[in-house]
Length: 524
Length: 102
Image (cartoon, rainbow over all chains, first blue to last red):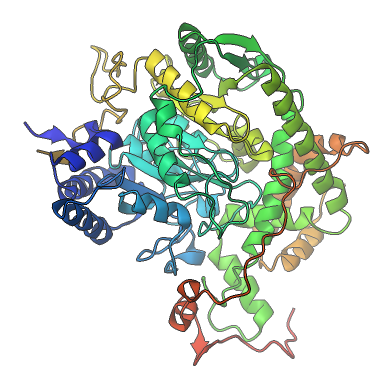
């Protein structure tokens, strides 16, 4: 009986290829068929790369035929956010500025996933230069949330999250500067992890905020995200990124409940102020409470903790982020690469018009805010204050982690919103109120689905937070939440009212949005 | 004191981003909203707290051997390949000296 490609996890695909149940080339074709069937409605990709995917698959099939041992993710289709260089593709950052930019080399994160055997299916849509929480600021097209096409997938890594949620790929890479992995994962009902700053190399990823940016994976199961993390840290620290750190590849073991991080007997912190915050919808709060109940049932102890300075995180972020973005994006002057305004007779004019016409509105807003904040007289007031707030926020987390092993909190205040629903840019910034403090402090977080909201019927998520470089804890606790709330969502399993119901213990039945389940892409 | 359009024009010049049509008025409104949103951070200008500029403390500069790494070198074709305007082995730019406008 043919098997729908989207019911298989990355682990199951890799096992099937390894055991000869199907060829990597068959997986690549199934993925491309799924993209062809679902992409017209979802629009998760800026560029689809069938030649690269099929060539990678043929290499894997040849290696297996030659009796070689296959790498751990051999034959697993992967989407790569379009701010990551991959030779043979354009890297556009969803900007007119880089519309025709050909990747001159491959980013370490992408190279490591390919070395682990992944098949590059395409470059995923995003907010322009990763400035946003909706993917609506992409210069090329918006991406639609697979659970409700009138809604956003979140952002900035919205294409990556939507490609996974629509069953086009089981794994995707994103980057997270203020919540850009965890927020779209939450809005699309998939797992998304921002590891600790420094855990994954940033080499070859177009920089936004250099002290905030971190690369991480999306998947439909915690185990798949763990397998991707092992691939991303394999090979040790990257000499091409001076902030890259040595991290042990212990994530898959943590997902299986092995290693030094059992959940039973551990302490989980809840922050009362977060659970009572203005703007948090009751259904998201109920979802976080389901996660808390799952951890309680797994033998963890729930404890209240306080993070008194985290209130300052959004303001600190919108000083540090734009300041760093302004510095990083100064390189786009239209000379060595990027859009160049034709017919200019002076260098200054060419630069100002290339940037005016190459960048979209939000990219200009963030850069002008950064330029203002770094200007003489202003810099001393805002920039130093923000970096002092950073010291206090980091100390808050350190104090809390003296009492607890992980902290449980919402990932987003609300479910996916409609395209255009939040038009005020500063109101949009509040979408990241629960994710941003981790980029400020540097430690890791994971967004894990906790079922559908009772009023919206849309995916809900909880976020787990661990101390810096204790990211395997995120996996262990997220796996316990996943098991406790009934496995990932069941694809296309409808109740009489048409709602999707979780199937207890069915971690192999994945969270593909019901409209797309089984649509295109079959494996024998 | 709110930023004026004249202030914002100066910021845009500094950022090398030309503002056209309604953009100057819109950007002035946005910057005033954004700066108002940042107000809470000013309470953290505390004399007894050290700033944290980077999440990884005690970073030291990374040095490598002063040796060629040909496998990492961009070829000339790759280096020039993404430029809009080149001449021979060079990037081509408009005149720098003598530019008088703006």
